[in-house]
View 1 (tube, rainbow, N blue to C red):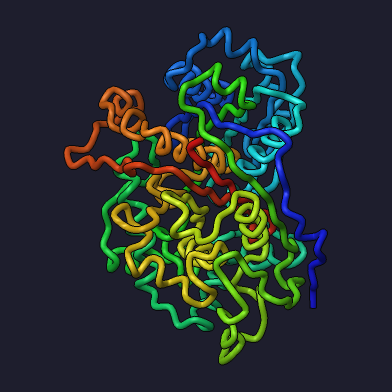
View 2 (tube, rainbow, N blue to C red):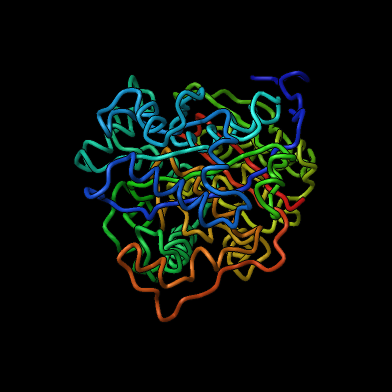
Length: 456
């Protein structure tokens, strides 16, 4: 049994406040042959510096940058080692120092964490975080095998070289332990595909019924195609800054109140039983009857210790007492419908074993207590892996700045990407949103970051 020490659970702190000041995106597509990765990153950074109502010119902003962080999941896709150096040169940031971050599916979140540490320590005071993925230069089958190699190649890869197979086993185990109907998982897919209909950036928008999701072709039982994330090409950019620099750049900086990381063994079979790590809204009484029936251990094969660890640290760092009450918005890493419902429990939206209540209650919807993945998430909008965790925070930034409509409703923006704004478009701006959370997740839970943003 693993037992964490007091120092293991030390709550991080920033020496200086860290702010998010601007964000930019491309649209996301299955294939993007007309633009290379450098062009996509340039497009995203241009949106960040030219369309975020900054108080300085693009040249002035460039002159304020003193460190850069890059985020790409796999060199394999673009067949270019040191791709970050190429992007850095193309964006004109040389000879400034830079670093490229890779932590699987959590690469984007980890890159933001790295940039935040640079600002919080005083090492830098203005840091662009640039993420992208080029997933269209290989076949879907080869791409799946590349992604699957982020799990343990000695064991998990033998399940079929496809992450859907790994999560299908988790779905089977989770349903066995918690008696969750398939219809509940399908609800998540229906919700996220629909919200993607209102995003000009989205790759896989659609209005489906629960029945259509359940009758869709199976990728790996029980998960259907509509319950799995997209493989995408695209980029996302954020600018982080210290307080003085942030207010020079914008009148609406958003405080990055906390961002923390957790991890767990790459091979899921190595995950040993331990006492449940309690979040601020839980007590030992919460789980007095948990280890009964079909549940023998925790985190087992149906929970993510990395997510729980990241949330534990970030909640305590930011003073979060009850996530459903304290957050106004949430972006989860919905790579599969099953991983989404697992995350509901890992971050304390419901106790372990009761994650279904969060989606079934309506809390996760735009009209609910904690609107979740209004961006369309990974299932509806994108999973250009190196950009994903950054994309989540860009969407939350615009919500907290009350700019969601500016970046989603403009017909010209839709036309830019060869689309027409839907006639039934919905404004998904959450009124008076003050605090938001983003979960960036890798592998079968090997790395996770939890970011908390707040209006100052």
